[in-house]
Amino acid sequence: MKFSKEYLRDSIYACWLGKNIGGTIGTPYEGGREILDISGFNSEPGQPLPNDDLDLQLVWLRAMDELGPENVNSKTLGEFWLGFVKPHWNEYGVGKANMRGGILPPLSGEVFNEHWKDSNGAWIRTEIWASLYPGNVEKAIRYAFEDASVDHGFAEGSYAAIFVAAMESAAYVFKDIRVLIDIGLSKIPAECRVSKAVRLVVEEFDKGTDWKIVRQMLVEQSADIGWFQAPANVAYVILGLLYGGCDFKKSVILAVNCGDDTDCTGATAGALLGIMHGMKGIPEDWRQYIGDSIVTCCTLNGHGKFPGSCTELTECVLNMLPVTMKIGMQDFIPDNKPGLAPKNLITVGDENDFSGINPEDYMGTAFVDSMSIRSRWSFSIDSPFAEAIISYDRQPVIAPGETLTGKVTILPHTLPEARQFRLKWVLPEGWQVSGRKCLFTATMSSFNTALDTDLANAETTFTITAGENVDAVNDIILDITAPDRPTHIFVPMTILG
Figure (spheres, rainbow, N blue to C red):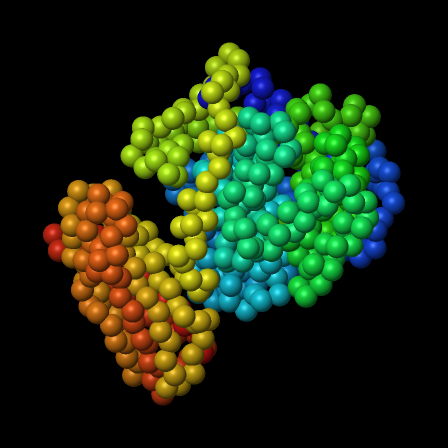
């Protein structure tokens, strides 16, 4: 797979400009619960409105630049949340409060977050991952999940981010909206609410149902979780794209006219169409009206400069591509054909070359399958030779004398030998824990065959029993070591009182 640099520059710039246009059109109507009847801008010419949809992505780009892609995950993004992002509203506030209390992502997106975990905060900030990984859908959705999980855990807000990021990354290669929808749907569980809402729109569009009726069907489908939630709002974007025929003006206006989180729906529709069609797909009058500037409202600028225009942002992304487009051996291996050499490498040349690239190559559930084995009350700590996953059976809140059960799983990295791991618990005074103290991991070749016995030896259940004294925040350290290895895996486990 080969991209020309000018094609990437045009598509990435159109992505950010489309994001700015759609967000500015939708912002004045955010939160309305009725069908709207707008036809364009309700703002001053040349003055794009600030939008958190775009602001937060400037912070994520900074994280990628300063830390390097290999060091960006939910934990490091959480640190950038606390250091660079101002708002405390909705899921943003819940995630930040949990992290300040010692709760690591993705648990920070689950604890005390029943109302907002299915909301819109994550799928609106996915363009950065798609643009840093154009055509590399699997990488884009993994970063989108690491991002989304900080304030949405394993809930619908994270599924929405995976769906949108998959569409946007694939849009650098495919220009058929139905193909992009199918790729996005293949990356999330068919039974999740985002999937059901999107499928409803597709099915009713194919029947010829009036868009206003479909919009009302989406409202009713999401009535139990209310407004400002991801399933219906992602579906409004799809409604705009399908019923608007992917015409920029028609599609953005239709998405906004559905109401609810209008800055998000308009901005995402505009960004996706920008990637699909480049600057030639954005009407000149709207381009001139909005200008090139980015106006921020959520970033803390005291630690250096963020890009101040769509042009600057585009160049910053292009500068990162030589790093992010390096392909590892596990990329682009079909889910059902493990062990094959990479089918496609992504490079930048003089012209685009997508010959032999088929939509079917992009379908697959490997990532969502890996998520499905995780408890919603789980988090992981990585090390050079293994990853430790902690899964609780419920929210980690405990009273004196109560118990909290869970599981420790150790997944080795690609090292050649089997290994024993020893578990040592450091507990508050008077607390107790029961469970195996020694685990065994097989070689990676054995893990690739998914032998139940290998996995059983690499995990153990545990039961924590609180003592008589339970503080508001109770810190437990699980120290995991291996013979003949100097590295300790220190797992901080914060249990709330």
